[in-house]
Length: 264
Image 1 (cartoon, rainbow, N blue to C red):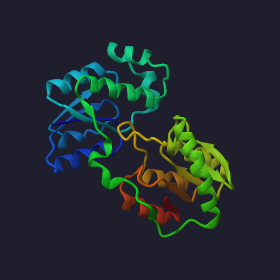
Image 2: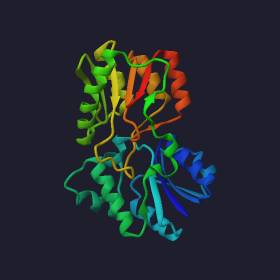
Image 3: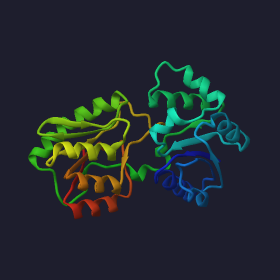
């Protein structure tokens, strides 16, 4: 029996489908107003909980005999630890943490699950095929100027990610035009593109010590569409540490828009 705490986006659904193909029986706790209703089709059982129902989630997994689980999917940061109404166990846990950064708080949540005998596994467990592999996946390759900006951008993006601020930077002519904050990658692309006007590069990197139980960065077709709107023609990603969600669709959309997608 495998547990899944599912937030928004396509990844929890991919996970459930792949786990089912592998013969796993998945008990899913779906976060209200975030998770996809289609999860019910691929889960042995599905339960809808509010984001703050921490103690309730632990009790359910224990009742169902779940000893291993994954936490996958987006939860809008404006709701994560601001708009939620935590139960008493989660409230005490949050208040006990000196740092209120997302990675620190989620890490503390994982420790609480594991204290109760529920081991939290890396989300790559059934999602490894989605991890980005080195190479240029599009017809167009980065030009010399873009390669220089990518090199600069990776250092800047890594520093940003290690500070737990964001994972994406928009770079032009060897300078950071915009850094991602709590608004997310797509919003950062929109703002960065508006500032750069044209000729910018979007670079996304993972933390140096990325904990795959907590978060694996990813991009999908929507990201490429946002880049096209923002007139950003090059996307660079870190190999082996982030998901390409539906690689073929990304390639098709990027080629149609004349966008280069490079994994380095």
